[in-house]
Image 1 (tube, rainbow, N blue to C red):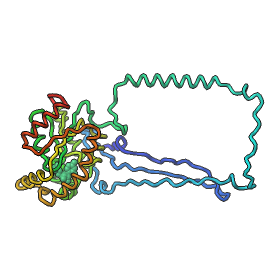
Image 2: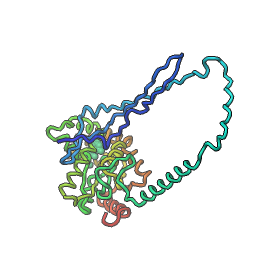
Image 3: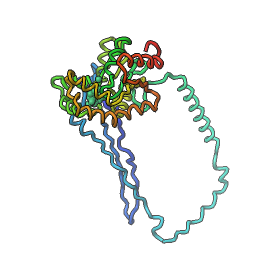
Length: 343
Ligand code: C5P
Ligand code: MG
């Protein structure tokens, strides 16, 4: 039975600034309310028994509601200038007699001292607490980065990501999850409500809405961990994230990535490889027209993701122009420098 678990991961901020204010305009009072309602664009359905994520309907994905009304200006009273027309401020009231003796300061001193002491105690306790898995958004990802290792593998179409991943799987027991392969499998799954949507996006070299891809990856990771009884916990996530929203959402709700392995290859070389592969791959997007569209998506949408991780010093960049053997030797050397000999 599916239980709704949208609250934990949803961005939600309801009924903001509902303050009432009594104002006077032209002698009549009225109330002004302001409400802001943010709707969650990423509410998930998680099965309580298997923990698998159910995908939302394609139509709801395409019409994500983000209604955000600007706050209107508040109207304030102009009553100070109304009436007599006398703008001279009244004289200040005389100070009360024996005012010094009426104000007692010691209760304030006691309250401040107790408050400061309590705060220091809290700070010291926090120092000794183990770090939590909560991320900057306050959400807890499905998998802890201390138990599960995720390496994102990026590069243009035809850069050789799949080829290099297969070798790393062989030598270091990673589980290889290709976002493109998972999308194609979902597209071909009988009864999938996403089949047509995925097909159209792939043909045009566009990025499928992130909800679909993130959910497919999370489910595949969960299945791998469950089936191996926890023994397989290192993932090469190939061809993902291809867009900033995928990167942020995956790290927020699934698992923060350790690093990005980026295969850098000139477009002419990638085109040559893809056209060669297209002779036998049977892929609907390994043709000259789709390849052009995929290159444009890569430059405009996916490179900003690499730039983002580069700013965070999380990118291991490998020149992918050489033969698969040479590229693999460089990959091993560079990964070992960062992760140690066992990867
Ligand atoms: O990685 P691969 O070349 O197999 O991806 C094929 C297509 O799948 C991409 O061109 C894109 O349409 C889609 N895709 C996506 N998001 C990803 C990975 C692939 O939309 N993260
Ligand atoms: Mg691939």
